[in-house]
Length: 231
Image 1 (cartoon, one colour):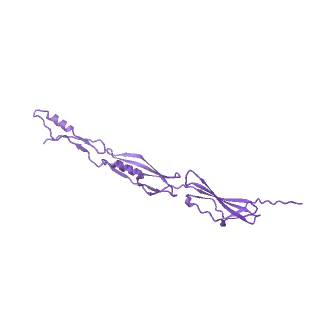
Image 2 (cartoon, helix red, strand yellow):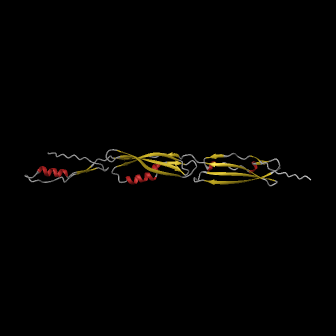
Image 3 (tube, one colour):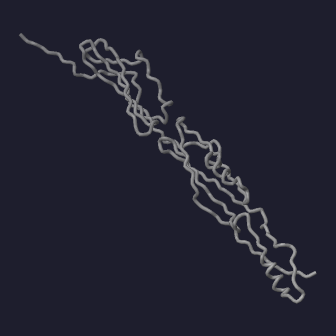
């Protein structure tokens, strides 16, 4: 008596299973092909039953993932074979500018300057960006350089960094111009004074003249030239 044992060790040959791919966004992931388009054959089996499974591997970035798609073929003898497609979702695209920032112009003496500056910063200088995957974008805005002008007028440059949830970022710049267009304000002494005929007329006049002052709306230094003119 001869006993023969036939064992099926040859893996099934799959057809219709997509190749591994890398895409940028979740929205770029192709749909799962219908089971009817996936076939499996081997030398021993006549037919296979195909089942599908999918597993998701997340990362710190919500846009970056790996999808592992499995097609499991079971023949009439219960032997199982698996074909796998790995879809890598990797967002490496920087946000795109929709509207570039606008400079801010402030004028010395304007009581609303602080409010205007705060509003400008809160709106990221009117900058608008779009993430290619539709995710959120975080702005970081800070002063990086100042060019001093005459008096306290100056130009301050701000960097504006826009970063998506995967760490892709773009940087641009905008400026705040503090402009001095107002002349100094002179505070005059009392217009009338009296001096005795034999009094120190020059001393009184000089004291009177020196009591005048001038201030600048930008807070800068003011040179006040005083001349006594006789009529």
